[in-house]
Length: 118
Image (cartoon, rainbow, N blue to C red):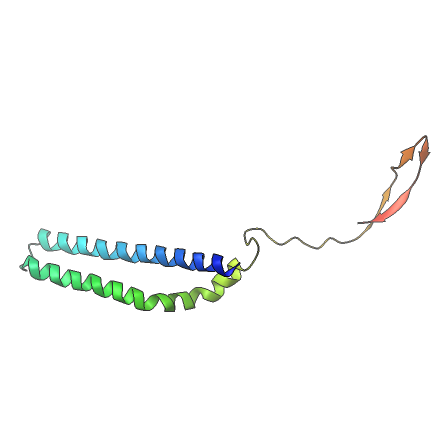
């Protein structure tokens, strides 16, 4: 895998991790909002929104700080997987050589027999 391809793969992984974490953050906001309203929690909504926005900013901050550590943790296994030409195809087994008799070459009623190794 070339350096350019590896950089594209790393970027794609980082993008997907970011989407995943952002989805968690947004769902957390929604869940807390529903919980507060459904259970009539006595909290000022401005205070609630400030707290939740701070939590979401913290999640994003920890994501940005941790992405390099995440890459380092999966780098070895990922390099082994993508280092092969096509990791989904098993490597061919070596062919064992054995003599084969071929009685084919015939021309003008003449037949030759030969032994070939494959």
